[in-house]
Image 1 (cartoon, one colour):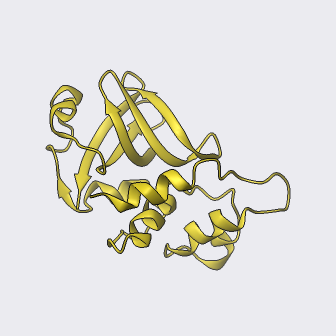
Image 2 (image 1 turned 180 degrees about the vertical axis):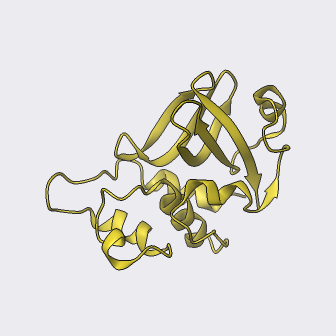
Amino acid sequence: MTPWLDYAESELGVKEMKGDDHHPRILEYLATTTLGNWARSRDETAWCAAFVGWCLLQAEVESTHSALARSYVTWGQPVVAQGESPVIAATYWRLGDVAVIRHRRRKNYHVGFPYRIGRRILLLGGNQQDRVCFQRYSLRAWELVAVRRT
């Protein structure tokens, strides 16, 4: 029921290249956004939202076409109210949703596909350790801003 996750999982291990080389798949993710040519030509450009958007578009689901993680705060339908407790979110989220988190101190946003929500959130996402992978985020350091679905 969530073919975009099949695409996301098939991309596990795609990672940025060092130096002047750029991973062609990451450039494909970035090409689905409204970024200018210069930003779309570099795998060092923040690409978590581009990865989510690419996966959705592969499954013929509309994305935000934005490279900003916070653009997914209003995408699709809300699963829980914005800023709702992770305990509430843990009750209502399901595989295939999109989660947006924000670092409590630095205030930067990140977006990915949740696989577990509790005291930590496990996300499958892009630009996590400069690659597509699963990563845990402590909800002490990160705030769960939104959980959305198609």
